[in-house]
Structures are given as C-alpha cells and as structure tokens.
Image 1 (cartoon, one colour):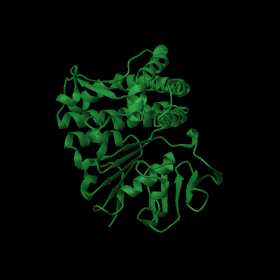
Image 2 (cartoon, rainbow, N blue to C red; image 1 turned 135 degrees about the vertical axis):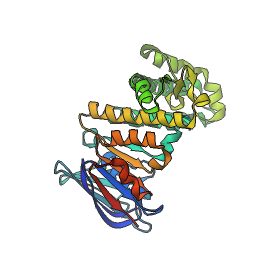
Image 3 (cartoon, rainbow, N blue to C red; image 1 turned 90 degrees about the vertical axis):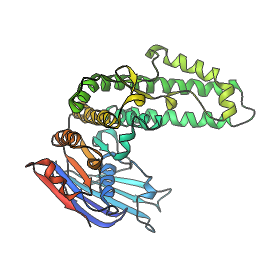
Amino acid sequence: MVGSLRLQQFRSYKDKSVTLSPAVTIISGPNGSGKTNLLEALYVLARGTSFRASDQELGQIGMDWWRLDARLVANESRSILFEAEKTTGRKTFILDGVKKQRLTYQHKLPVVLFEPGDLRLLHGSPARRRLFIDTLISQLEPLYGPLLSKYDRVLKQRNNLLKHLHSSKDELFVWDVALSEYGARIVAERQKYSALLNASLRERYRAIAHTKDIVSLAYSFQEGAESVQQAMVSALHAHHVRDKALGYTTVGPHRHDLIFSMNDVEATSIASRGETRSIVLALKFIEVEMLRVYRDQPPLLLLDDVFSELDSTRRMALVEVGSSTQTVITTTNADIQKTFGGAPVKHVKLK
C-alpha cells in the first residue's frame, strides 16, 4: 500500500504532496485539474513506466528532470528520478535508499488500472485486447515482460529485412526460427491465462448483470502447445511473399486476439452497451483477485473517472471490489463519496 506521494516537476505539478488512505481515496476536481496525472504518478511508482506516455513526456515543459517519491505503508520508501541530461535520458530508482537502474519484477507493485478507454475493450482494436492480457501476465510471470521484449526485437529485425529488396527466404529463416520460438512461449502463456480468466468470467458477469447469459473468453490461436512453434515456422514461411510485398510480418502473436462470446455468439455483434460494460467490469474484478492470489498481496486499484460511465448497479459492484483493496478514484463529481456509505474514505479536492 502507498501511504503518501510527492510529485516534483511531474506533468502539471511543480511540487505536490498527497496522503492516501489505506482503503479508498477520492480525488475530485474539474477537468484539467490534474487528477489523472496523480493516478499516472502512482502507476509509474508501482510499475516503473507510464500507461500513456514515454519518460521524456512526463516532465513539465522546459524541465529536464522529474521526480516521484512515495512512502509505503510497510514503512518502505521508493523514489524515481528521471534526468534527461544523462546519456539518452534514464530513470534512477531509489528503494529504501539503494539506487537501482531498473525496477525488477520483485520490486514492482501489483496494480489494476481502470480508465474510460477500457470500456472499449471488446469493440476496440485487437492491440488493446493484447495489451490487456499482456499487462496482466507481466504482473504474474517474472519472465513474461522480458520475453515480450525479445519477441519485439526479433520482429523488428525480421521486418527490417523484409523491406530490403534482395532478402531471401534463407536469410529470413534464422529470424523465423527465433520469432517462432519466442512466439510459441508467448502463445502458451496467453492461452493459459485466457483460460484462467474464462474460468471465472461467467459467474462474475452474472453477478454484475443479474442474468443467466453465458459469457466466455477464448484466445484466437488454438494450436496445442507442442505444435505452436512448428505451426508458426510454417506460417511465416508460407506468408513470405505477402510479408515481402507489405514490408512487415503478418502472422504471429502480435496479430492474435481475444474472442468474447455471449451465448455462443461473438459478443461484439450482439452485446448491448450495458452488457459490454458488465463484461469489462467482470474482467477487472477477476484481474484484482488473480493479482491478490498470485502475488499474495492486494493490488493498488486505480479508477480514472469511470464512475461517470456506469449506472448505479455497476457502480455498486465496483464499490464492493474497491472496498477490498487500496483504491484511488478520480472524478469530477465531489458527491461520489456518498456512494461508499459509511466506509472510511479520504477526499482530496483539486482546483
């Protein structure tokens, strides 16, 4: 849990300190008052990177550094200092006074972010759904983040080679093998965690939507784990001419998707706006519970102005989950505190 937060030269804040409740903190204020910037700072402190911008974009205009400091409830301290002047611009992480060049898996805090854009998870691009599953797995599997980075590097090399007029299948083969090796491991993890999400999705959805509809989730690539790598090598080889013409790789986990169904029909074609929101809410609730169980600690739940997008029933479902873990909520509605009844809530008002 995060007890306090200080931002220096970060986004709209020259120097801002905030104390958080171990339960629920509501940050209210008009649009443009910096509410999301506070959530972003918490996310950066927890995960080491922003969910919406590069390190260089996080500082105030004209400044070449920014700093975040936090005191955790366990009396631990952590700071992140970014200095653009040093080499190409690097962050320094300071954990209980010890400097580190990166935030390792064991030092990252579990966090669940819920922003208005997540409500478009079903109808948005496949890239949004891949980001959802990859972000979750990266918080549960220490080697998954580095695996994604390795895959992306090999994919970039293969795409660069595809752009050269005289590259041949033989030249591409070494990259095909490497890409399929990393890709097969990514697919195996996505299949595993898609199945785990799906195992809880039906009941979670029914509890929120008060319906008997059957909602399910499946990963778009269904090859068995033992045959994924060979299937990828064959697909890359078969698509060489098309890839060459387009200048990029058209098959692989970077093109896969999560498929949502309702009563055995693809959800995007029949789900109403309310049903879609209930599915996304259910996924977020499952995400919170999986992180609690697998990481053996409750995650930090960041809710960025999503209450205004939900009806009273879904709001109450979100309040129930938010009451079980440290939660920070941003809103333009200062009266939202009433939603929590008599529960202890800290209210930070911005102007």
